[in-house]
Length: 441
Image (tube, rainbow, N blue to C red; front, side, top):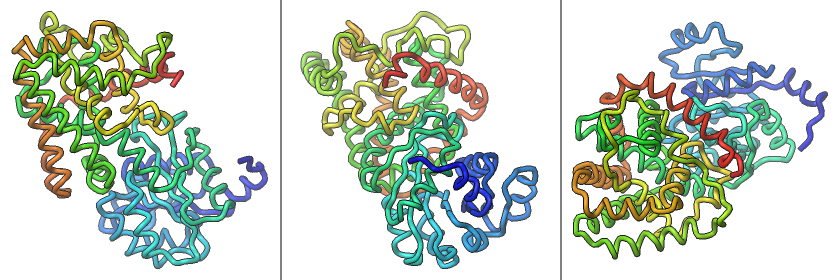
């Protein structure tokens, strides 16, 4: 697509961008679009209109009373709301949509979003949805941004592309179904793994970076990413897990893989454990050639510890959380490298640490041997397995408030460390994503 500068300038002078929902991602879009010269209006909860208006009085976008006011004047409306609430919010504001406008959403699960648009939007409205596959704290440059032309002219699609070009993201065009399948394959297990780690540490009432069982680069990655997830809002992860039908199977399998592998560990069935995981290794990583450069390495991550003075020498670690990830990919027939074009930073880190464990000579064998023979790590593995099963149950229940209570209880436990962890995590992600191995992917 090549949009002329004259047409782009004409659009910026004549079109209005509306954003319904000024959460973290809605706010990111409102700021970036308005800073790029677009006329942007937005709204959040109507009962907080005055406080929202005061909060953003120095911004370049305008705060309106509610979604009716936004929809009436906007040429492109983006619903940036929780997946749990998308249907009710679209139902409320869709009738006010400007004739001939374009409408899209920024939810992490497109199935319910598109269903709501189909049911409630006027027929003379085009539908072009978007989804930035990263969190609000990540630099948008080079990150995947999905555009979904569900019901629109090419001119409308070109308009949306020209709008989001200021994000400097890597645009990927998919259908809603393709989007939900890929995000489930890349994000569902990623979130389940790090959420389960966080809850396990919370239940054990200790900060892992203060334990000799969690020393080293791979452990730093696990800890920093887990805390990064819990420092965000619960609905970001609940929406993907509960509303995305494709995600359910992945989360259930991750729980089952963790359980199966833990049983083999405590039963001392080393040969059976080894056979199963080497099959998984061949399926997931077997296509990598001898000259393949690992996405990251342990030494790269060693400096990113929340504890500047390690409490002692490193103790054996079974790496059950990573073993279960690769096993679940194998059981589900997912080759994660197939989805790199739509991968989030967290997914690339998860794949990187898993790849390092499985593809570094001797490291997988050591983890399996130590997992079976050493008992010091068993309490951590037990709590992790219970947590993984608990998350799968929460998702199967489909209860957002139950999910929220579990998430926020762990969030509160780690809250005193979020400021330092966020800074450290940002530095770690920046280092990892600029690593030459990651660039190749």
